[in-house]
Image 1 (cartoon, rainbow, N blue to C red):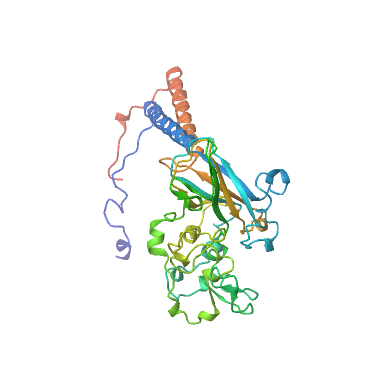
Image 2: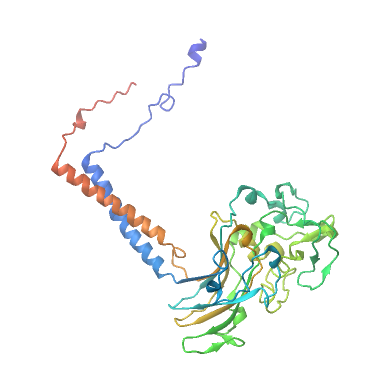
Length: 395
């Protein structure tokens, strides 16, 4: 009786009698499949590669490996090169700044995107990725911060600032609780880019005046750079009245590393050549879009993140100069920093690999189709007749 109860039910699934179809690999079927795949993949690859080539992109490295020799920094100056940790976070563009000029050789149709690029920075490290409190980032002042380890406290010796105020508030003997906490938050990229000068192909010079209706410093639009879902659902500033110990808490904008990066209130006015925001701040705290972009971690050690967008065309022959405040130290992890401007196509930025991959796969399929066809015609092999196959339905 027990033996009978353990018998699987008499159903097609449990008795492994489900209907199935398996192609019989005849020469015609194999040759046709390879040929069709090749005929589809090659045109797709050509289109993708052509679109990638149509993307206009310029990239200039201004700090990190390869920048120690004077030959590499002669065109931009040595101010942006940070060889020691204590040289970072100065926000002193006179001493730790440089001017980077892009010579536009091809027309760049709006929108032109401005990126910063980091190399050898592993945002995908497991401990780094997990060091955050999503509940805290959504505005929960009482959320657990255990997931933020090891970056929960500021450590002593750090002053906190009232955002862009020159003088610190409090003292540097307090071990402040970081709000928000975590490694991702407290490694925020804090270099600043401003458009400083623009010279058109006919040698018309713009610096302290407007270009196509905008002042140069506001030529880069820093809104709309983060994912809409992130902005609307994942980041909300904490109500300061809900903080249990505000005096011993260091908010993001009070951190000396970010006081010129993150506004402390909406509408905060900018400071020329000092703050990352160049108009009255559209958002503050964790709702600042530069912060939100940084919090979406990259999957590879070399990555780009969107800094802003230029909504005017840049004609060939234009010279576009950026003033850079270099604060983010990359020498500690043998990294690199670059500034990038680029247009995009209907499938994104420049990506020659995708088109080449399609072409290679398509070409291989066509070669295999030709080889199998030649083998089938020159040295055919007699196949069994599928009409004589017997299928047993009771097993």
